[in-house]
Image 1: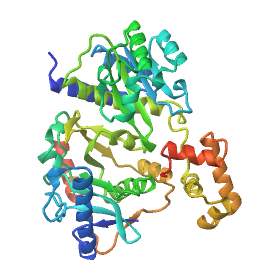
Image 2: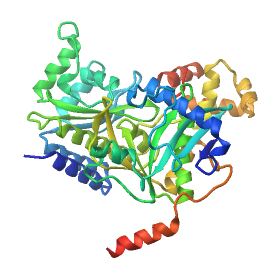
Image 3: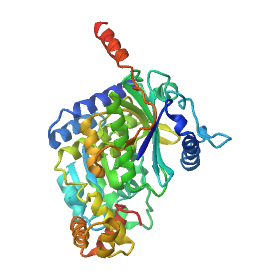
Image 4: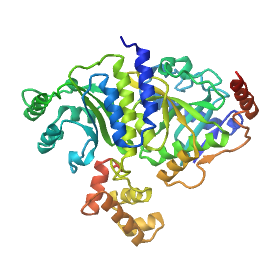
Length: 243
Length: 219
């Protein structure tokens, strides 16, 4: 019978070993093996998409049944999945069964949960990860016969957070942080959000109007905005600037 | 700019320290709800506020807008006294070159990122200057990805546990020139973020460190 100390030592050893893997795939292998010992059979390391993004765009790595992923994305289940919804609201890890939804009224949520059970994806544990710029992400683990208790959960929590970071770091730099603006780009957006023109901003920051325009354009491109107003709206929505 | 306050120069900052303790009370007791820290006089002062403490205080427009604190692990620390269970796996650190980092805060309205990055750069910069190799911290787990995504290396000391109903862990953050460069780059900061006024003295007695390490190596 595993003792709290064993959970602790194993978890910290796993985390130390993670530092030695050199590919995201190897990190996922290590995670699969480690989480497998708790009964987990599926694993996904992913961001949570904003309204403009598709789920597939923000998934970092996954070990999911292929058919389930196809179904999940085709039906855009991420928008109605109660687990994803709860993940955005919570810093704390939770079991999938703890994600609230209304069985009577929320038909789409019920649909996700029902289809999931077809793939043995009914039981699981999810660890939210909220990074810089309050980017929402998670590591979600699924399986049927799980070693989930007061002592194993903190171990899973810590392992998942480090697993997330290792995968994130090993993948191409521009994945979750693809909307990272430079400090100057952020600055001009902050002034634009207050109604200042490029000419005004130039005066305020002591730069040429054209330079301010270039910063605004660069920010707009990075945010995939159609125009300056759109760029400001996206920046506020994604909490890149404060309103 | 981030001012460094120690026993040696605190006479230059008495009013600021008062402001700091009151602000800490507003934020940690008032906003975060850490009732255990509540004090009848509204000044949040604990067992690790004394002549060994090193305060980082960010001042803008003549008021404190953020800060944190370092404390030597060669003295009794919060981790050792209050949260040793968080270090159950790797143990509570006790070393001249390891300091405990705590009371990190940014005032409302300034939580947009740049000040935060400056505060993170400050702790790296000061520790590099002073030869502090790593800092221990008790932190809510939601800090971990934020630190990591800013380029900090955090080693856990044990498993997380609930503290004040929030998942909390103890970790050791590595101090390195590389990390400092990473943070400064992200923040668009060039040059030092520190202001060190008045008398200074090294925070670590280097001869002690060398003797201690030689002794350990021989043991």
